Length: 214
Image 1 (cartoon, rainbow, N blue to C red):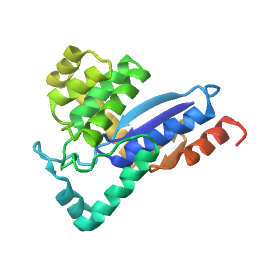
Image 2 (image 1 turned 30 degrees about the horizontal axis):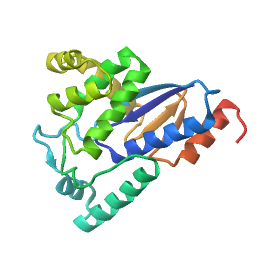
Image 3 (image 1 turned 90 degrees about the vertical axis):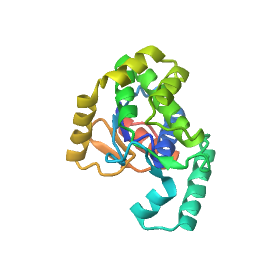
């Protein structure tokens, strides 16, 4: 079974969605071979290099005030905690451009699905748990090394601008097929599950598509 996980590393519901999907896959068990690929989506492709204050950005984008943002953040924190993922909303003070993170993920994907998964999880942790800047090359290299990747090679990818065209092409491909929000989980190029769904939703879909009993 092929699963394309379209997402951004600055999307909290994407971190929740991945944790939910992995929980569901563990429940289904090793009898269902899965190829998991991460595809790029930028929530804020026009973001300035210095980023923006996260409360101001969310308030302007969604038309909600600081109290509602705090309540939403607490709900996200609780969802993450239930899945074993730590959101530190106090550490995440700014939101940044993520294009270079997607280039690095593309490179990791060429090295293998497990390498790409390890980097994706590391980058979610970098931003949402540790409050790091995912547009910083130093940050990206450090977390690539934590994910078991070669730091010198990662820096070379970042500084060379490698994979920029490939990432732009992938982004356009999914946008042209109607993906406007993430996470978007596409199974075998045909079945779409949208949003940070609970594990039960993913598990039911996986079992149904694999012909397994519920």
